[in-house]
Structures are given as structure tokens and as C-alpha cells.
Image 1 (spheres, helix red, strand yellow):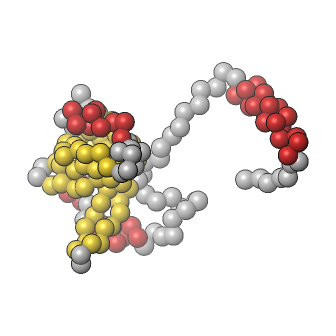
Image 2 (cartoon, one colour):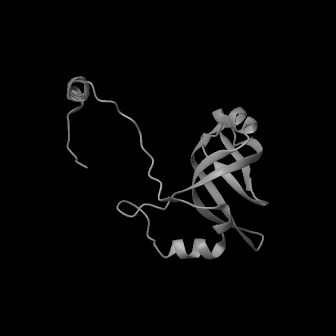
Image 3 (spheres, one colour):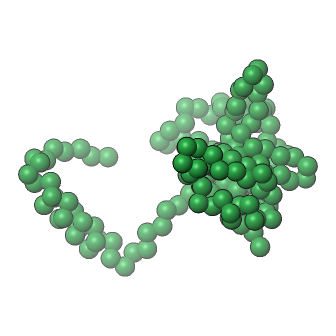
Length: 148
């Protein structure tokens, strides 16, 4: 990270020169976003005890990212759009009779793909939901891959 000050009158020139420099420096390089996955985990290992053990790793942030996991070959079910502008999804994933709720922020465009998928690999992080004196695990989707 870096910080600096610039006069407002020089901002446009600065933007143009930085864009030109970036274009020159990055020429021929393929830029891809990456997603770090700590490990695959079977659905049957997800429980509140496991979540509490993960909580011992806090605080999460730079240098200590919140763990992310991949669930292999889970079935998406009951996919629905949520949010004011329907830009988020809520669904369940199921495998071997076990199921968990998933929240997928900004995944609304993938609604039909998930509804039609037989199984997916789901990259997610764990969250705990306490409502009405009941505690359960929720999964927050980070990405997914539809399996053939």
C-alpha cells in the first residue's frame, strides 16, 4: 500500500500516464484472478464443533485469511434469487442425505446454471447463523464449478 497527494488539476494527466505505464508493463501478461482454497472437505465433516475449532484461528484478515474449502460433487437444490435486485442466490447443497444452506452474494446471473446443474464443486467459507435460539452452519459461496 502507498499513499500520496495530488492536485486536482493534475488528476487526469496522472490517470492517463498510469494507464499507459500499466499497459506497457503488463503487455503480453495474462491477468487472472485467483482464489485460494485451503482444502477439500466432505459435507459430513461440517458441524458446529468444526466451526468452533476454526474460530480459534481468529482474528482473520491480511496475513491470516478466513479458511476456504471446496465441497466436491454436491447437488444444488431449491435455488432461488434473493435481495432487492435479485442479485444474490440462496440454495442448498446435498450429498449422501446431508444438506446445508448456501448464500451466494452477487451470483444472481448464475441462477439458471445452478438450477439445471446435477452437481457442482463449491468453494465456500463457513458462517454460523443464530436465529430464534437455534444455531446452524451456513455456507457462503465464493465460487463454483458445474461438473459434467
